[in-house]
Image (cartoon, rainbow, N blue to C red; front, side):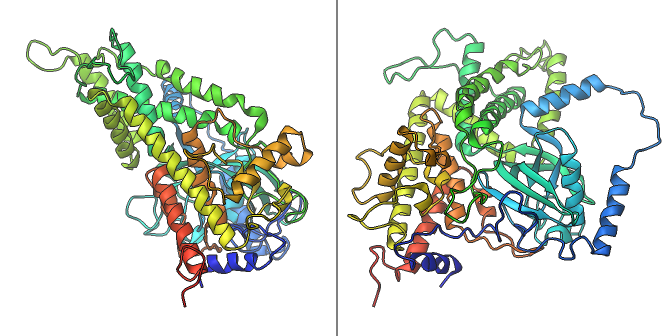
Length: 559
């Protein structure tokens, strides 16, 4: 029996007292203020209570080396205006320059929240330095087999083809406490996926330039928005509409290299602006807590919770996503469609200069290839849809596919929970309060509108979600632990969030200090987008059920 099935089976044996499936991501959990009781990496804190002289000496040496003031005079800034311009442009494109990298031997996914003890000298220094700066306190978590032991080792460089991963998760520190034994207790939240483009520091801990990497569906959506913007900029008398009878055909898409670079930048800026604009709604500033009675009062929840007070960020994110297009500097002397060639048949000198500037920035942006490939695919898709007058049909079909996968995921998840007797069968009383729910309230908050044809009559989670919604309507104080997704939250983003957060319940990541075994969650981070990740969820749900029921889908065992 696999570890996942064993854990689920143990929980299902407690009939009449449904328990939440054990989260394989976390080691022993702690409440806020409980101190360094454990670490998400699976080990203890400073087991000598601050008396480990070797560790303390290492930490002291690192602090002296990397925080000492320099006596050298600070040179006058040369080209500071240009440097500021580049930093601002990088932020606009979702490029986080020289970001601290936490390279542990396990993964965290967007939407997950964990409490951890930081005791290794390298990361004690890293987080102490980060916390000493103005917020928000963000860093990047990326898988490194062997953890801190592999830092600086040959074969584990932040390079393509090495044993180190480059795709990881942008993180935010929601709570921090310095302990008497020189360790740190942190509660951290996963915000979004990203990729390391270029290392800027190796030791004592890593730093690097990180590019946010939205899902392919978000990229294609952004590319369509960008395409509409370009149509308006080009002064089309009648932009393409969604009317199936529309016979207007846009002009052929220009193919100059300068246009391609500009389109990539429009696409990533639009996608990133939407993602960053939703951060305020997708998690609370303070750590989300479990309802009292589930695992003890004040326990840190395993998932982030929607911030109901920041629901206005949803509309603001959509507006900002559209507004960023006008902020993007258009290549000088090279209007979309390409500049006219000079008498000799070559491109004007101004266009060549602008093209070199664009290519230089694109090479920095796409240092590792993954971002370039995803952007080019999204832009090419949007251009093809426009050329064939299929934009609206393609957009609708993509959303239909996502919603079908989302509904199927919930239906099969409900079926699995019932098979494991973690939900009462039909006709039995349902859990009436969030303290009795068999899954995290933050996950159930993603419950979507019913699919075409409605939910199956046997779907118990649908009844539970409806009951919690009724409690909210009655202003039940219990519902502060259940914040349902806002109707205005994009359906595409809701499905994406489900594809990340459900793994805190069904995943079987094994973590340990400096383990070299890797993580099954890395494949989720490497997935192209939401649809692919939801298909991975369905495969996992079916595998768990098959093993738990002896290989039959109806719950009966083979004999």
